[in-house]
Image (cartoon, rainbow, N blue to C red):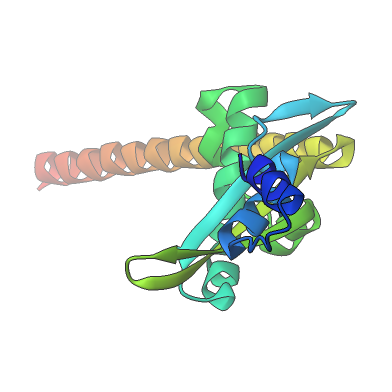
Length: 172
């Protein structure tokens, strides 16, 4: 619509002034509104952080947003039951960022910044997620095994203590 208006104004020799919001909307990358999808052997998704008053606030919230995106990726690829078991370091998650776009919009409280980030989970990222899943499974099994042995030893100690007390009462 704004392009048609600009063309009509240009035809009649009038000067068209494009608002900053319209200019930003035209410059917005296509990947921002794209749904998560596979591209080759990679999985791409976009996330948005904000709106916040400054870019620094967006950057401060980025690690938690990246972890949430990882959770969604794991849920989509491996299922909901393993979603919260995978935690990767924030610096590694930042390596998955392929593109960023900063959007400044006018809100009732003033200008606010929203950071759009394109993530790409390639083969190496998927292997790292699967490795982390295996480590998580091993750690859970070890914890349950240790807990089982501790419960078994506590029960044996209780039985031994009971027998010692019962035996001392009979002989005394």
